[in-house]
Image (cartoon, rainbow, N blue to C red; front, top):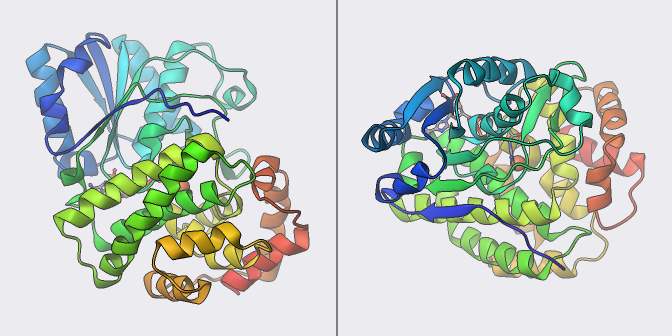
Length: 362
Ligand code: NAP
Ligand code: FE
């Protein structure tokens, strides 16, 4: 067994301001990678700009990252980074800008690399990345993954490179500006990371400790999510749970809901967390050995899977126009992703996966 997490995490109010000297070690020219508005709305961009100015670090802002960033957007970011000769990157936002910053860091360091060749390349060098999370969901600030949209293959996929951020700033106050909708969908993403990492072929005792602490946190978090009671304790605990989820999938990876959810995001525009969440109850029902599943429910103070299903039904209300034929098409793509199948700890046929889709969506 092994546990690897090379990211320095600074958690708490004013994390950036109180620890800004750490940025000095990374260079004197930075590329800030953000979405269109949330980095500013959350207060994170302002804090970072102030810190960089005080340190005398020159910075440039690439604020064109869309949700589920595309390879094409990442190449735009590379153009700016190369032109400005930056030494390191700072991703500020939800998973989309943080993942984009990781991907851009690889492309800047490898200026000849063609966009889509990255997926089949062996490990490439990259520039240091700092991650500042403004959602509590993906855990990207502590994972090596960068999930990008491949328009060529009409899906989302992992870049296939290991890019752990050097430094992660987790200040829960940056999530105060989140809407209810994004709070819920990203919170569900965090939960699914804990679940898919815990109920996984690759069991890791260190990751177990983190996942189990995460489930205990959700004992309090789910009732607050149901009541839309997003007080400061909620924001702090959800950010903690989200980073724990990231640490768990950094060791074990995700499983069927993540792999199956990509098509729902790509073709139906579903937010990432909802795409995983809508599949989670049927995924859990598919487990034959329920030992670890029952332990998880117990830690959340739930008596049965029915209780969890009820929570999900209240949090996720979707009307998706989808046909059996579309699902059959998704299944073929999904089946080519052997990694997710390997992480599911029992044999499952194509029909079994299709049943999870159908039970969840039709
Ligand atoms: P996101 O796509 O980064 O952001 C969703 C929306 O929330 C955007 O409209 C964003 O606005 C807004 N937003 C973000 N922070 C806000 C704040 N503090 N206040 C108000 N609005 C805010 O959402 P996400 O769910 O965090 O990330 C999803 C992406 O991460 C997907 O591509 C997914 O596949 C990936 N992911 C990665 C990992 C990993 O380990 N690397 C794990 C799971 C998921 P702006 O557009 O203005 O920023
Ligand atoms: Fe996720």
